[in-house]
Image 1 (cartoon, rainbow, N blue to C red):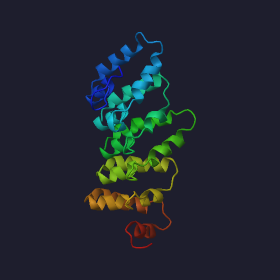
Image 2: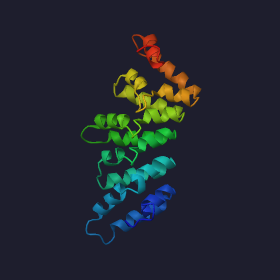
Image 3: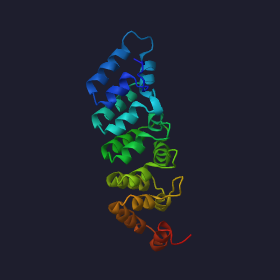
Image 4: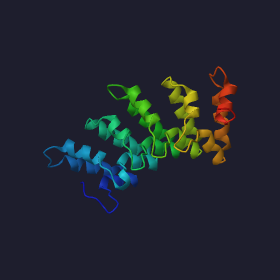
Length: 222
């Protein structure tokens, strides 16, 4: 069950990447058979990392299959795996499943991940904040990834979650990656006009001095 190929993938990684739900279910049944501690094996399968430290959840976020992700969430709940153990798992580049879903505009995947974070028993809001603020090695949050890849719907849902958590939206708009770039810099660099327009609208919302914020965003003032 834990045997790996040259890329460090187990059968679970491979079946998630291939979107094979029935195979995943069968692997889960086999993990139960003849084991002294089947739950321990199941947890290892879910948390195991292939090359570049990607988990099955990372593969699911890339594929964008709602059925696959819902299956993995269900399996994780079955063995009482804490949501943060998978949701905050980072690849070698510091990338989470949320980063991947945001960059590919997989809104349905984002929503499932958010609901799962809600089910964290101790402090779901803290887990949600950690998800939104998680940075990869380039200093990109999911917000930056969405702006960089012109994932408008993903950007919109990330913005709404920031408001839901009562975090200051101007901090989001001005957040910078390691190179000092905001979401606006990334949108301009990528020629993503719709992203630029949406960021401008958000700079207007709920601000005591939107013109000042816009100047800061565009680098017209220090």
